[in-house]
Image (cartoon, rainbow, N blue to C red; front, side, top):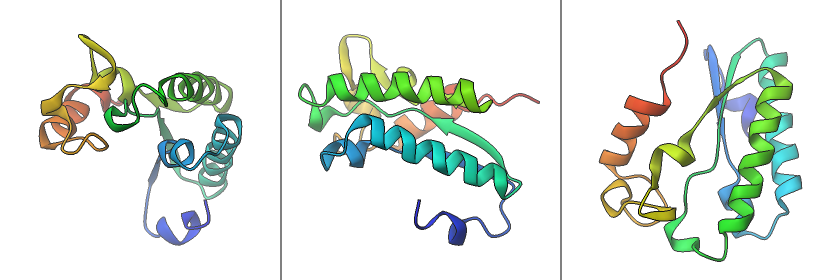
Length: 131
């Protein structure tokens, strides 16, 4: 949030994704969701189009962080609906159907972040924007 205003020069759209670092640092999911709401609202105030991505599966945080990620994603979906912004389904796009709560090994580079194949999958499936 602190870097938002300085990061959007010449931007037309703000893509907001966050929460996993908050969970890793022990911030409550309610506080993380409220910070994301502030970012969405600030983007709108700046006249930007805003999209919101939910939190990815986190292999290295599994299983301990799984309940918090699921709860935060519920709050993010509600936030997107309340704020009238598009929700990008990052979690479901990269969740391994054979290992719920985690990405497939070929979709992550390090257990924290998507690999090239994971980003490709997000681009092909999650970023189907209207228009």
